[in-house]
Length: 158
Image 1: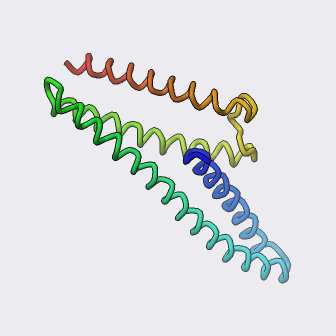
Image 2: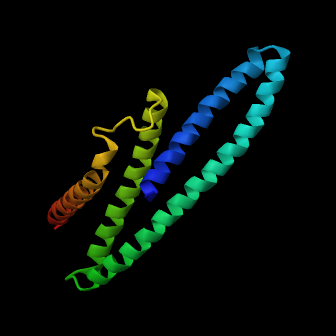
C-alpha cells in the first residue's frame, strides 16, 4: 500500500471515529442509564483509538518528509550550479512551503468529503483496475504542472 493510500485510510478512520464519538456523546447526555454507561465506555475506547490513529498519521507524514529530504538534497545540489544559487534555493523553499500548505488544506477538505459522503473513495472516477495508469498519469501531470508553474514564477520574479 502506498503512503498516500495509507494516509487516506487513516484519515477516513479518524473521520469515522469522530462520528462515533459524537453519537456516543449524544447517547451519554440523552440516553437511558444503561446507554449512558455504555456510551462512557465507548468514548474512552474511541479516545484511545483516535490517539493511536493520530500517531499513525504522524508516522506516515514523517515517512513522507524523509522522501522530501532526499528530494531537497538533489534540489540543493542542482541549485548550486545555477547562476544565482541563493535565489534558486529561496524559490525552492517557497515552492515546498506552498506544496505543504496545499497538501494540508486538501487533507482537511478530503476528510470532510469522506465524512459527508460516508464513502471510502468519494472522488473516484474509475474503478481500482485503473490505479496503475492513474498513478503514472497523475504523477506525470503533477510534475508537468509543477515545472510549468515554477518556470512561470521564475520568469515573473526576474
